[in-house]
Length: 246
Image 1 (cartoon, rainbow, N blue to C red):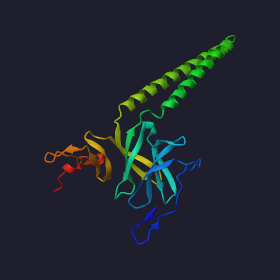
Image 2 (cartoon, helix red, strand yellow):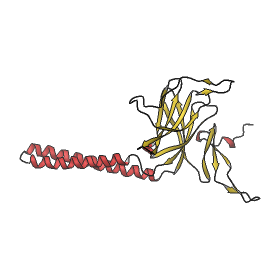
Image 3 (tube, one colour):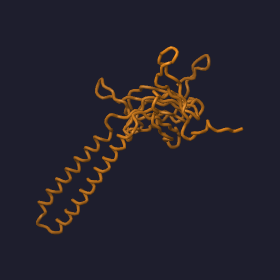
Image 4 (cartoon, helix red, strand yellow):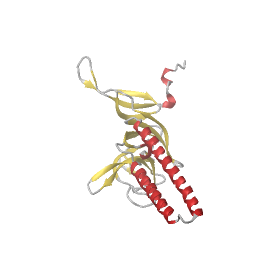
């Protein structure tokens, strides 16, 4: 990152690598970068490589802290979403907003299917063990208790999956999430809200408001569809515009 406010560009901090600190592997291919107000953090959207030529959007938003030379991430995958746009507040250097879309297929589906297969395998193994140990009464009782436990866990797993799928189906197609970037605790979700009808996309934020681009509407005089800038208060500041101080 460079400071270009002077005659000669000046590098801020040291150059970092977009890699996982634990594995040392590349996190992905950088798709979009935004800088915060004081030049201490950069938010990054990336794509994951799927083969030699294909790419898939990463469900995480990453923030590189220049002072710590470290990367923090917030994962939208458990909510079956992925980020498409992001922006920092021009004054509050820790506040970040992100626009997310709903995934066509939840990222946890594959894991759930694997869990079901493992449970089925456990059931089959338990059934085989019952046949082999049928001659022992004590062993048979223990196996029966184990089967009941496995069956109970399987039912609970199915109920959790159905509940999760229902929550995902009820989600809005587009949501806007505000996040605090902290040095001590990483990225913390502050609030999330669906994109209201009539709005097209996120433009940015400046406390106490979020700014959006509306769907194009026809002008009565020119009959030309023109989008508008729309301002919406953050949830913590809702109703502030209706207050009269004096």
